[in-house]
Image (tube, rainbow, N blue to C red; front, top):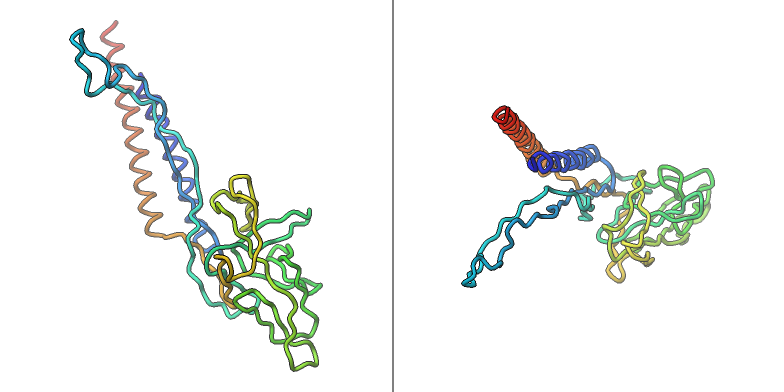
Length: 262
């Protein structure tokens, strides 16, 4: 019976949707996390009687047809790149992006990754790095004994060198944009890599050409909305249960048919 296979695809789709929701809820407190959503499409149809077909020799046309669907499929789990809430931390190395763009990070193999997580640290060489020790680009090294570290809205990093009363500019953060942010590939550790779908990375200065500005002493929180996720979870659970009931009903109908044929 077709209903068994059709309902099974519905259960599989809702199972995947629950997995996506679980990932969102688990990352509600992850800095810079962007929520995902599951998107679905209907599967191919069997056209038992095509709409618009000729119904009689007199040329009557069928106003409706008979189309039997074969279920549902998942087509993607895109990320929603909306702005998360900015929270003040007071940490001079915490930096949040207000608007579009990503921090550029150099990986140990020389390739580049991108992140919205601006919870930076300083390594033993004085370089500004991520929590995992990956160097933020371009490389900015803070001299030992420096004070008064400031990062302005355009990403320019300044300090007062030891023994000096005037500020010295050390460098400037590069902010990267993509034509399609949803096309980035998530790799864990709050890092993304560019893909053909995301488009070529475009490096620029914060506050120019549509790039967001920077805010020192703050972090961007996850954009996950708890109420929305719980509502989606309940809806997915109910849809899963209904599909399971379809399977139970189809199975009972098959049993009845089998008994009648004996």
